[in-house]
Structure formats: structure tokens, C-alpha cells
Image (cartoon, rainbow, N blue to C red):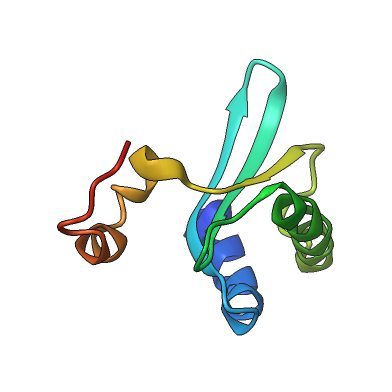
Length: 100
């Protein structure tokens, strides 16, 4: 199991207890260094204030887990339509709806 999968297992209960959906977790190196991304969603949409709140909460959980010893950038965002389409469960829930 990779770091992203281990973190998903670690944070999913907290995210779901708050009524949110953990759509994806990514941990990879990019030109700027290591980046950890959490994609979250909720009924009615996941906005900027949600991103700010969950950046703090998830950052604490990641630090507490001890799974990432190196420096990294943390990003928390909504999944958007293209990323959500990777999740078959979510995709089936939007069947028949129109997306722009």
C-alpha cells in the first residue's frame, strides 16, 4: 500500500463523520517537490471556506500519522466534474443530469 492509500485509510473516517465524501488522495512529486492532494465533496458543493477548514484539519491528521517524513505541499480542493468521473459510484449518481 502506498502513502496515498495509507493516508486515505487514516483520514476517511474523519472526513465521512463530517458528512463529506473523500473522492481521491494523490501523493506525487512534481517540479516544485512533493504534493499531497485531497479531493473532497459534499452535498451542495465544496467551496473555498471548506478548502481552508479542511486544509487545517487534514494537515494535522497527516502530521499525526507520521506517514510523510519529507517536506510536501498540501492541497485540498473539490474534485470537479472530470476528476469525479473517475469514481464510478459518483458517476452513476449523476446519471441523467446535465453538466457544463
